[in-house]
Every structure is written in C-alpha cells, then in structure tokens.
Image 1 (cartoon, rainbow, N blue to C red):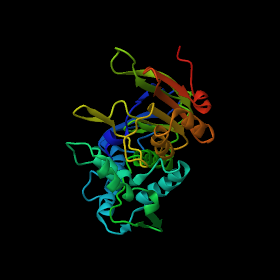
Image 2 (cartoon, helix red, strand yellow):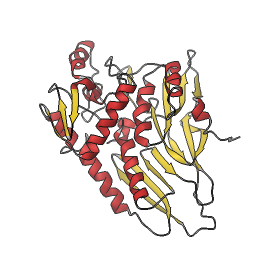
Image 3 (tube, rainbow, N blue to C red):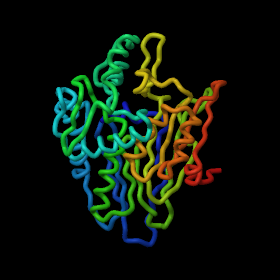
Image 4 (spheres, rainbow, N blue to C red):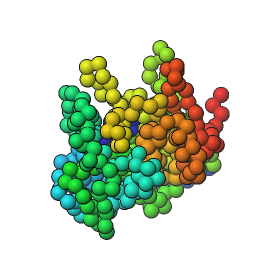
Length: 338
C-alpha cells in the first residue's frame, strides 16, 4: 500500500535511542522499503532472531494481498470481479476489523470509498480534472459497506461497481503482523514502524518507557514541521492521519486526499491532523481517518467515550490560526519537554 495515500499529516519521529544497561541484550536494526514507503524494525535480543529477509517476505505477502499498486493482488482481483472472490487470511482479518470500525463510526470509515478516491485523483490512475457533482452522484450508489459481505473466506459484493481500498487500515495491520512475528520469536522489546505508523513494546533494557515525538506543521513563516509533543508508554501503537502535506491541486482548486464516503467530496472541516494511540496499530489506523471526518467537538467526545483510544488533534481555528488539543487519555501519555 502506498504511504502517499495513507500516511499524511503529523509525522511520528523516534526520539529515543535504545540503550542497553547492564544487560546481555543488544539492539538489532532492520530498515527497508515496502508498500511504497520505508520501514524500520528495531528490537533487543541476545542474537539476531529476525532477519531483513523475513521482514521483507512478510510485507511482500501482505502487498500481494491488499495493494492496489500490485496488478495481480487479491484486492485488484476482487475489484475486477462481478460478485466477489475467496480471500486470504490477511485480507479477511483486515475486512472484518473494517466492518467493526465502520459500524462504530456510523459509516465515516468505509473501505468501499475506492471509486471516490480514484475520481479525486488519489488512486493509481492520475486525473487532469476534478469530478463534477453529476459524476459523483453516479458513483455514490457504489459506496457503502452494506454492499459487501464476508462469509468464511469469501468476500461478496452486491454490486459489480463496488471497489474497495484498504489503504486506510492495511498499513496499521502490517505493523501488527510484524510486531506479532517478533513476539512469537520471543522478542519483547521493539519498535516497528511502517510509513510512520508504529507499534512499540517495552520497557527498554534500562527500565525506561518508549518515547515518541509527535510532529506537526509550523505556523506563520516557519517552513516544515517541528516536534510538538513527546509521549511515553510501555506498550501501544501510534498512527496519524492528516491533510496538510498530501493534497492535489488542479488549476486554482486544491483538495485533500481524505474523502467523506457519505458526501463523496474531500474533507473541508477544521481538522488538520489526528494522531491516535491504541493497543494495536490496526485499531489506531482505522480510527484516525474517521476522526478526521468529524468536527473537533464530536471527535473529542467520540474518543473520550472509548477507553481503548486516545487522540491528539491539530486543527484550524475560525480565524485561520493553527491550534491543538488532546483527549484526557492522550494527556496521560505526555511528558514534560520543557
């Protein structure tokens, strides 16, 4: 899955340098390129228990299942089918979680948004003009997770025009698969990151918790991003969705890559980015886009009502100034950086 379609907005930076303290554990670092982006796997072990070849192999299998940029992937075969097809265990796990998040967000998270993503120029095929209202109205009957159904290992579509895009959740799933692979190998201290979406397990060998820097856009004349906050935790996942870095401009019109599945149009609310903390990366990744589609008050209330979620929001005030706020759960993760 291409990170340019999903990992947008706040960048998650490693701040910690994992240090061995009175321990036989040593740090193993693996870096590579997959799913249209970079990945990094850092773990502590007495020996090299997991290799780059193993990591690359796992990510390749996931790509062949759910990448729209692999012509022979299962997801492309599903999209080209009339009624659906049998899917693999990775595909099935992601779709099942997608149904749960779709229901919980009342349809704001929707993997059938693929035709709209393509219409607005954020799919594999490029466009020269944005769609008009009539074109969008023709596509909307093909949108909605009520139009797909999974039974055992078969994913059905109720209309041939239904296409799915798993970029909004599959990268988080990839992080979890790698994290679980490390755990199966007996590795308990690690940071797994794919395209900025990450999951960590600690504490570090010196007994301290993981520290993750949260970046956001600079306001005014300052270009680029800077670290806004630092969070610390023993175990968990952090993902971000945003619209201030990834957009498309044609003529005088600029649109966000995030599409509201209910209206068919790119988001135009006050949200700039949402960073979500959860127990696993698929959960954080699945909810961050949906929270971007809510207004700030609604999003804060939504997160507060769910014990398994915490979130940090960057938004634009009515006067155009950039501001941020966070849920109580996210506040508890914060550390003093002054």
